[in-house]
Image 1 (cartoon, rainbow, N blue to C red):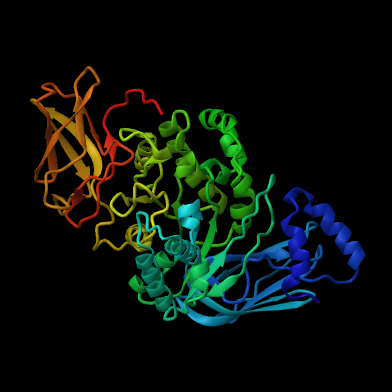
Image 2: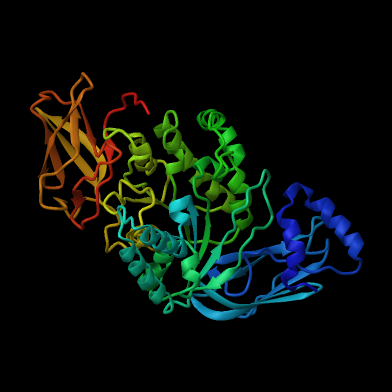
Length: 511
């Protein structure tokens, strides 16, 4: 009898759901009297279940077989007979944070899941900046040192930072990681590659660095409770690959954009291919929320602002619809970068950053971590991920846990009004004031008149607002801030968090 039905699980994983009924019936007749209960990979030793929740456990068995769950932490013992397709699904209630416990699944066979913790479960997804691991960054630093080229980052500093993170991991055995293997599918799959691991200096180096820093700080801020991170990312992929294909096809703008997107050698671009294989098999695993770090894969495509704004909102909405509840959706705004070695005045990446900002109005219960001050314009993969994790935690505390003693964001554009020859700008998240990060005059503001020609402008702080003007524009009608791929503005909120780029006009843009 294979442990956890692993041999059959790999078969299930690669078979679209629509074929399961026929296969289950054939399997039943071949096996005869009994068949192993099978658990999908997301259930296994060292796992974390969401605390204080009704969680769903599911799997496969012989058609019309009785399956029972026995959680060690309660007297519950829900059971059911599987249907003709052999799938079973049972719900149990979890207590407050704690453990370790066992969770027993009983059918023809018995599976005992060991070392189960109860805590907070988050899904981390996106492309390479979410995918990057400590071991990958360490190898990069060592290669750079061997070549003698320090480039824009000092490899010794990178290695020192990663060593400190690895050392700290030893103190966090209540953190657990599940890394989803990179598989794509043309139909929704029933299982995925991966297994739960306890946080150690070794295992943290092989999961998402952003995810590790997020999990570590979140656990600390919530009083040292267990945190389980499900990490499912693929570098270089567009948002549409992570959206159910039907949801892209049913949106005229997204469908048109998907048709003109070329194939690339490093990963899937077809709508739904990664949703099918790396997200759908996780449903309905109970999660507290999602952290998302992606956007570079959508840079440079026609009408990128409108398309990405819709893509991001559609992704969040469709995932919530599949799970059946509105968990917090928190994402990272991509950092300034010199695309294609590009034009100093280029703004194709800025279009995506602004689309990410505008998506805040389209996605209820979401947040956006601005990282314009911790990136590097010569490296699309900023090396120091701790601040990224920290800023995601600020939003998680606000949106998921109702902690309001820290402002989660720097200034976000709210509104503008023309006052004589100047524009007054108001912001959300300005309750602790506005300031210059370096004490120098604020940079990267531009205003334009009705002719649509933008000129550099002076921005002056006036309480919780800015007054922006230029002698070149006596009658301003529009304002842009940070509107350049390599802009590194010094405009921040009172807590030091940077402001997001924005524009107040809707004039056509070229990419």
